Image 1 (cartoon, one colour):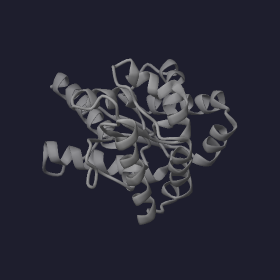
Image 2 (cartoon, rainbow, N blue to C red; image 1 turned 135 degrees about the vertical axis):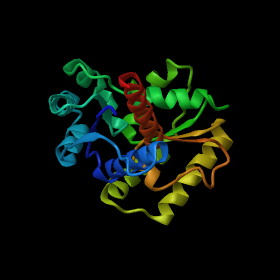
Image 3 (cartoon, rainbow, N blue to C red; image 1 turned 30 degrees about the vertical axis):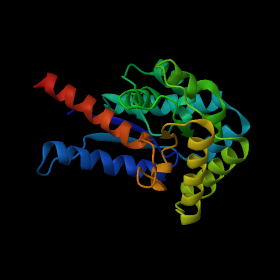
Length: 236
């Protein structure tokens, strides 16, 4: 099997979900005692979060490019960046290594296109919701991602950083997210919802929503497993 290289730690709460889902996926596909062949470099999130807050994306890109290089030198066969927001600096990572990079926005767009949805609501950090790097990537596939109004965006962002990244999963916040989605369906014509921050999968799932839910963490894991399986088939 190809060795999947994970750039994680942003936050480690969702990176742990990647690790679990990758191993569960290999066991489901291959059976027995099979588990995922992977390498993980988990960065310290505090300096990265500070770079985000200061808008120092160049420094953040350099840090994650170095992470990708470390994984390449360690023997990874591909790179999986376990965060939506930091795909803002994906080009820096891609330029720094020779490894295939499984871009999360591309994976998400393909999943949306395989469904009836074309105007999903994007729930994510304010960086992902308000800047163009992610929505433009989706738009190139023909997916027009909507974002909540300003007040709702602030609350979505707060819950991610103040609660989910710190291991807190609150019922009240789950209810808030559901209410935000319901308003977007009713008032903005949203026909789906993208869980566009890997921590959000800790809080909500398809249950309780009337529109399709696109869990970017699960979609990314499936893409990584597909890639690893394809490499294994070629090698065989």
